[in-house]
Image 1 (cartoon, helix red, strand yellow):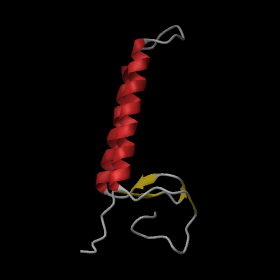
Image 2: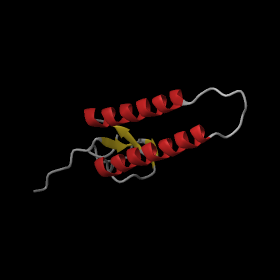
Image 3: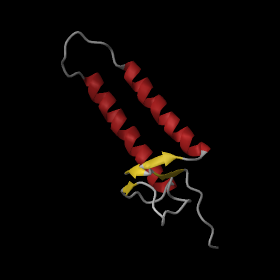
Length: 96
């Protein structure tokens, strides 16, 4: 009844997007960074600059992981909007 939702992410102060503001948001962001790092480490160093299936699988993996992160941010954060600095009408529950 009129309870304000607890967001894991808040809107950036400058630009478009979110910033993690709770432990859960930081864990999700850290897991995403770790997954991307692990994915990069699986790529083998090749002598030639040619497309390989390995690179294609990494790009697909990165796209899926990024889509999952954005989905979590949409569900666990306020609606994104362009911001440029702190305004008087900012909601402290939604805006960082």
